[in-house]
Image 1 (cartoon, helix red, strand yellow):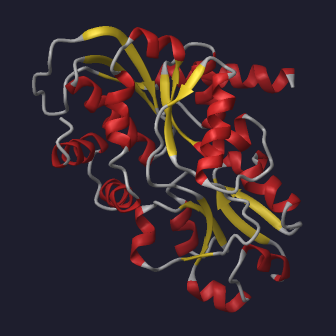
Image 2 (cartoon, rainbow, N blue to C red):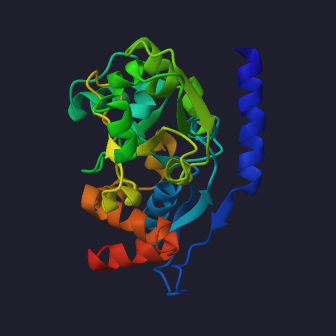
Length: 305
């Protein structure tokens, strides 16, 4: 445990050194209202949807006159949570189910999105933090296969992987190997012992599937790539992959120091439907648009900047 904690501290230090800092202006250099209050250190994890969420929240806050230091690509859940806990960040957008399973260590699966949020809120309050309102969309984890692979191996659900011949290779981020919503849960809930994880950068798992390098990929249900209909999601009949609505986690100290912060963020979160998030993810991952530009378009369309 001590060795793991020390490794996390080193990873956190390295991540914060290389994390990009955003300014207080919008991406087009438009003037904002007079800055007020403390600088809000907003972090994001290490994949496209998080970059988009970071820009959505940053730009909305700046439009309301808040000062924001955006630190992108801090790292995985374990790393960015450590940054918030030790005071290197003031807030970041989190997935409620991941918070419960990977940070709070709760293996009992919530029966509803409301229960997941309530339990997560109770947990962060014990650490002097707060969850703001959750988004309508839930970006759950899932396992995807090519239709041809599903037919060849007879796959319709996660449990069917147990009957696949030989070893089953899953393209997934490295942390999948040590997470309950990953290899640990596949073993404990589904009894799968024939799984090998192929560490793959988030976003590249679809290439691994397309090139036939793996049989299965760990994906997110709001990925833009899923819009094309060229992948099938395996049914998670045991509910391993939990409700993953996004809610900003904010230190109570910052909420007290920045009146109006929660209202500005909640207004953005309320507009983030599954369809909206899939479209923004597709714009970044498939068309190559910049997250800042995608966020700006969305905020303008909804009158938030």
